[in-house]
Length: 177
Image (cartoon, rainbow, N blue to C red):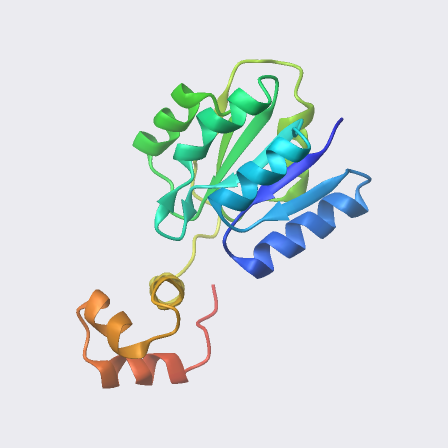
């Protein structure tokens, strides 16, 4: 298989997934935003792409068509922490090969790339042990905080929460899944 492109705005997740693919013998690189992803794809057209559904304020779905124009035979796997049937259907209609709800095993992603069948599939079933409400709240707060570049006041406004309440929640350790 040719080069793989991991597109995810979460720096840690991007790095971990890219390293995991490299350890499995794949040529892989990561991009953290749409512009960087398209630039890398133009330089070296990917054989496969792992695409996060939410890239900050941009939907990953907007990248599917441009990526397929650059590399028509590219297999695109869409990942999301907020799976829904509507986005799964839209991703497949746009040309994605597979749609997974996070968390997902690297082996499942690799298997989606290696699948001989060209028929797209969706695996949006909830994990066997879903995240707790407290953990989901923590992750949502972290995502909104990241979107507001760490600004507590603007994050609190976006969450419709008092600034001090947000500070108390952020002072706690992350909730366990």
